[in-house]
Amino acid sequence: MQYTLLFVESAADFAQRENPEQAPAYWGAWSAYVDAVAKSGIVVAGAGLQPPSTATTVRVRDGQRQVHDGPYAESKEMLSGFFVIEVANLDVALEWAARAPSASYASVEVRPVLPPMAA
Amino acid sequence: MNESLSVIESAARESYAQLLSFVAARAGDDVAGAEDALGEAFLAALRQWPGNGVPAQPEAWLLATARRRLVDAQRRGQVRHAAVNDLTHAFAAAQAVVDAGQDFPDERLGLLFVCAHPAIDPAARTPLMLQTVLGVEAARIASAFLTSPASMSQRLVRAKAKIRAAGIPFAVPPREDWPERVAFVLDAIYAAYTTGWDEALADAPGAGGLATEALWLAQVLVHLLPDEPEALGLLALLLHCQARRPARIDAARRYVPLTEQDTALWDRALVTQAEAALGQAARHGVPGRFQLEAAIQSVHAQRAHTGETNWEAIALLYEALVRHTPALGAQIGRTVALARARGADVGLAALDALPAAALQNHQPYWAARAALLAELHRTNEARTAYTLALGLSEDRAQREFLNQRMVELKE
Image (tube, rainbow over all chains, first blue to last red):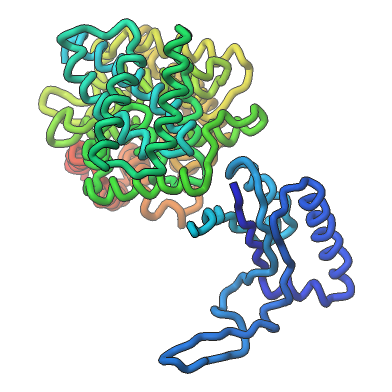
């Protein structure tokens, strides 16, 4: 089955990326994790994301395009990256989610992927 | 229900649960689909077996009936196309087992672990277990859990949809995950028992109680996990509680606290079974929450022989229990035992040391506090505590009991 691992982080977690003292540990942990996931051969897709301050949100209402600066909703934890993985079942997906660095300081949401749309 | 009827019903439930576990695991985790496909065969068994006797191969009988019904339903277009393929495939696998003349594999443990998976809504775990592993009707589960049948079936439907969509595996987790995962199964069974237990005091005696079913689940679990001491501990605890049921309510349907129960009314056979289970658990040398709770009940059970209760031993066991699980119930049990062993003032001091904020709405705390204050002749404070305990009680017989104690307070 395919699952998406959604990694979320707080503003303070994102800030570590730019902090010279914290950045090496932050990136070190993530790159080790990404390596391990890649080597296991379960990756279908995945990406890390720039911080929420770089987001632009689009809505179309009454035919009018509304574009605004910032994420779709303000919340304490924001999406920082994701993987789509192919594994046997939820327990295996949860194991991979638990290994993500953000599982220890923020959280990881695991969601089954929809089966392909019928043609 | 007479004995032979209940034996036949147990056989039907057991075969149904075994077949359901086998089929659901092989039909794409589709518990709801497997239930739909097997449900009528199960009801047919409950109708026909009492008259015709339990078939030599109960699973084969259920399977044949379910396969006929699936073909009919398919002809009438009553089943989703995708579900038919999965179910047909799973039924064929089950038939192959029957045709090979092998014993039908008991995969109920996998189903128990699915029902109590941490990814399932905690409020759905016990109902799901009762419905799938014991075939208890949703309406009865709803009445035992004091919810409407509609919202209970919604909860169950959601849980089953999640099992299928999220791909929760029908598997016994690896041994190193047992401490965490088995605990969820034990908790769900214990919740089923306590839900049924309170029903014993309800206005309609016997209506919807699930205690017998929970006890049976605990027995199934011990049978499937013979090396898990906590499963034995849970069984011992439930057997001790069950043994005391006849003594728990007097002729006037008033609540009788454990220490005032007539030990002649305790069911000796059940007490003996409880002691055997606890002894077997103790041989593993790995104590746990349920074994400690069972050991406390075992000390209480000694009163039937010695005429007195060893409160020092109980206080010690509670001490160990609190270290295992800091639950408020255990903390309060400990203070009550201390009070009995060393005096009400010692007990009250221990109660005072508990975190007050968490206890504000905790009924057993106020009931324990009231009793100790009354013993120390601090009448006004006792009355205030009894009033709070009464206000927080959910149980009619218990309210009457507390009210009686409050009336008896000396000025």
